[in-house]
Length: 127
Image (tube, rainbow, N blue to C red; front, top):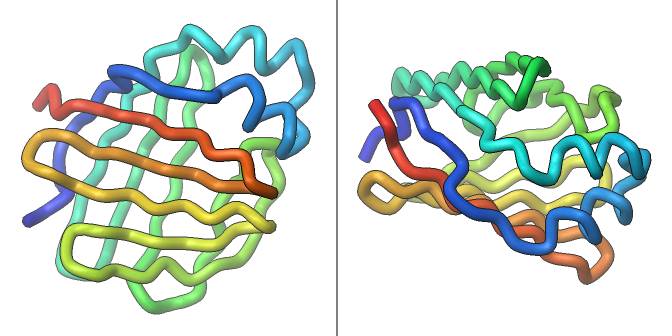
């Protein structure tokens, strides 16, 4: 099942606690808590290009499954990681954060864990 598509954030749990734990300033947490981000994903085999638009902020990144890449963290830092894929699940570890993204039909769930704090995002395909 291909990840390619445009997805809008439908719901999220534990946003504020997670963002504060990873070092996002309080004013940024406050601004971001109600934004319904849009993620555009293009998958070509093991190659991914992702554009995330959250309000006025746009984050672009690309990676090839199994190869080292550089991703932007929530605090704006860049960090190297290797994204792994197992069926319809992508997993990465970036600066102490474990990210598991799973595609199920038209729904993407992204679960992020840091020091025992779990943040879950659910997005639905809009095109």
